[in-house]
Length: 390
Image 1 (tube, rainbow, N blue to C red):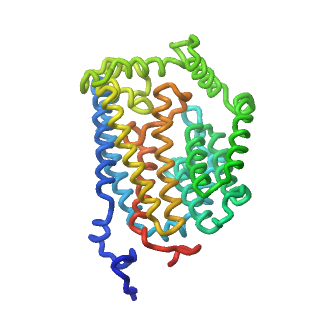
Image 2 (tube, rainbow, N blue to C red):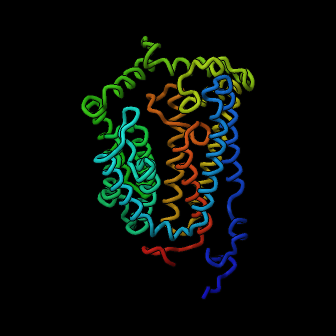
Image 3 (cartoon, one colour):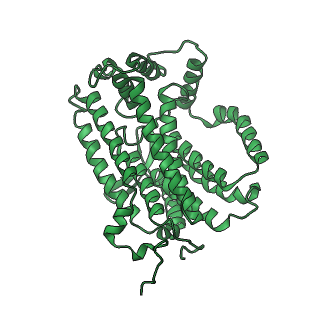
């Protein structure tokens, strides 16, 4: 029998379906839809002259509609269910990553897919969300007033390092960085003494050369070398590793303040930029709509991310706060790294711009993250114990 609830603290189970939908942050949802529409328009402009790619905008739009539906389903699941599912999701996904190592399917020079019946799945994408939920549950159960000490965060660090090592070996450097970024944000939010942060930073700096020399693959070292050469103004082979960045800079520069106009970009129409419909879609927007258009796009993303953090802060449970903040960090990493990559500020590692670049994998991950954020929003008044019950 349903319990009576005060008007200021209505439980999820006591809401009607229509009432629950009405409580969703529709302003945030409209911003996400607008971002997908901008991506569809940019894809159309960059592919309509190429018959082989002319179907990409329609596929992008269809995928977004499906991903939007998935987001609503995830949002309507009570947050306490996600708390209970956190550990099983993490360990099942970790087992799938081990399965990729043992039985994985290779493609494009990487072994990232696990055959499950008639389909191949990419467990590394599932891990982005599973790790966020698992870290949120860990801190929900274990955070204390003495959280600044490093040993409290040591299990969380291993929870990040184990899947990151498996994913790096595939190799998938972009997803590895995503796990480190979102996981590090959660560890930071959980609280660390500044001397611990300083020690970790020094350790990271000392590790740069050994990682470069003994861990990175040859093609990854070449990308780092190209990036450093461009950063220091040295000559690079523009017909090889530095070609994408050089063409991206030309496209961005030719857009000026206001751009050349929709479907008027020379770099985009002549297909000078490799992967312009995926990792380098921002160059199409910058060339056609200029600095103002590209900045406007990033401002919309900034509003979306800040909105997500406000939802995280408003949750009554530690799990809700960490789960929502981790999801914001995951999406924010993609945006930050994609923009930095296009501008030549970091090496090219193949990180797309969420909802704007063509590609279903990141789109579904992004919308799943916002599904969790909205689930936290709907359950913001629920105070959960370690087992996920009030």
